Image (cartoon, rainbow, N blue to C red):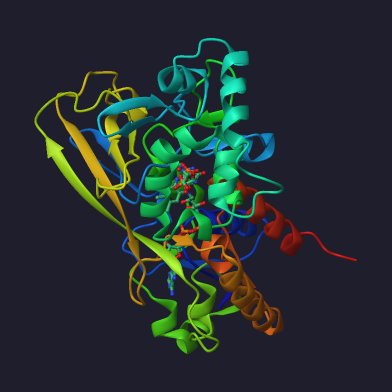
Length: 373
Ligand code: FAD
Ligand code: UDP
């Protein structure tokens, strides 16, 4: 008999498993996939760590989660600076002086700010949706070329129907700094995320290819408490209805050339190109193998955003009002479940980054292992 059954060997499950184990608890981790690491999973092809479920860059301002992940892997100095391709015109991301210079020919921050100020005049009052928020942040030209098409592909709906917070994730800078993230710490674990998560789970019983929902009673009987990181609506058999997600599809190719696009990430921001991002995985590790040798081949993945249907892999929660309300109803059911904790991106239906997942998992573990008075 285990103290805890942890459903999901993603980052949330792995951190909690490590912490509970180190606190002397007996833990069993299961995952329905045939591998650990959840969506951060990387697999090796021709010496390249391929991010199977999309590009993952660890970035944070939180020294605690940074220090924590560094216990399990050494991180390289990768800094994300994607390029936007709008019908063959290339722009620097996130929105910075290089972007403004290319868009308008402006050179100084003052000229750029003036241009944006002119263009944001069309928005009166507080922005009510992503379209208004974007125009108010960077003006209509950038909205039309770098945001509208990409966002509509990514979310499958009009920018005017999306919440404004999604675009606030992206920095707007009046400096020539094209670091995509406002983060003190950033990097990619050397050897890949799978190795990092394997190190976290070292010595912990882990059963793969095991779907909790298909054998719920027998699995539940093996442990006193349950930590569940799958979709919260699936746990309750969708009794209140389906939460919506966005799904993704990746087309991955091995190419017999050393360099396809010269950058790890290129965003295709026009509406017509069917994919959103094109990833060239080797550049996350500077095109070198573990011994520092140049890699002769390359692996690229086109990322397509898709409507989600039951049975598809749920990637992104759709954080609009309606889904927020439904989630809160599920949350009430969850709060009534005895000895069950819901966590992670799917368990909490939240657009979490990895550092936030680590930090939340540490918080949950702390509550479970330190006696509360
Ligand atoms: P997951 O990684 O989804 O793990 C949950 C696990 O539970 C899965 O392995 C799943 O198989 C398992 N599971 C579900 N249901 C069951 C069941 N019934 N039985 C058994 N197992 C089950 N974050 C960043 O910080 N930087 C980035 O650059 C970044 N890029 C991203 C790109 C994409 C395309 C996506 C989708 C996400 C990105 N993220 C990024 C977010 C990051 O992936 C998440 O924050 C993190 O992986 C969430 O960890 P998790 O453990 O909550 O969920
Ligand atoms: N976005 C955009 N153009 C881009 C990149 C991002 O309009 O070239 C918007 C899009 O709406 C996206 C949001 O900014 O959903 C957040 O981008 P981020 O790269 O953080 O998304 P994620 O990595 O989570 O998919």
